[in-house]
Length: 296
Image 1 (cartoon, helix red, strand yellow):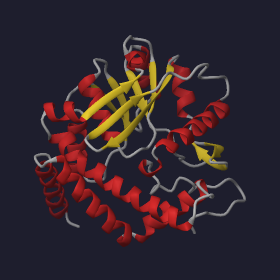
Image 2 (tube, rainbow, N blue to C red):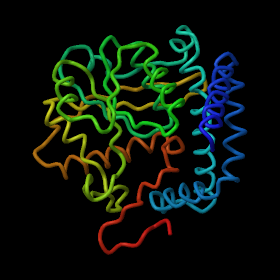
Image 3 (cartoon, rainbow, N blue to C red):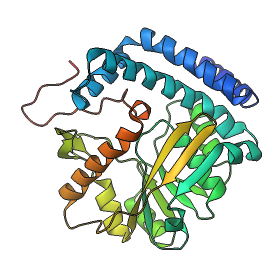
Image 4 (cartoon, helix red, strand yellow):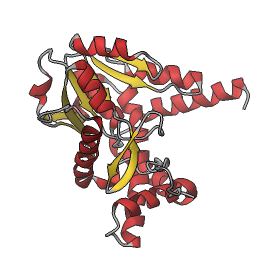
């Protein structure tokens, strides 16, 4: 695609999202249901990834249950994608009304260094918007640049629409992030994924040895920070952003033990909303030496 075509496509997509921002939430969610159901049948490769992941993690489920969960996952994913219209372009009154922060919010109310464990549930951007609008403390996140420069600039601008946030690229030095963390800014990270043998370690996830980045242990230890989980849950009228109590005795001296604990706790979180986890991602792509790919 030419540069002009790429820019035109990006502007059309952004315009569509702006239009969604003025529609009633029920209309946006209905459209998400339709598109999610449609894409479940059309994008066979990602449907297969989701079904393999779910089969591995829930071997007690029947084929029909796995297929139903995978379809619901596509629907939730598309609803959350379209919700970015009002999350990024809706009025401040709309986002404040639809985003509810609950739970142990007192964990965030002083300058003690805090690392936020934010698993890959579909409501990630809802949590980002809620925190930057409602929590009077700066948030740090690590950002992966998009290949389309127009889309990249749009995402960066809209995620920072309420200010109170700093976005570090993945290539940013750890030193700057740790300095910000120790100065009282909150670091939100999404470590429930693997980046291969070079950056990850092998620990169980649903009993399956899985490459997982040990960044919760690393940043908590370097920043001398407590670890606070945050779960972003889609609801009928918006999102609940649930702040959980800090994990006791974390971090330990062992990156392997801390990362295994993260995966075990994540399994418990997924039980509360299994259809809203990011199952379309190839979580088990990199296998330990001697093991075959589960997706081939």
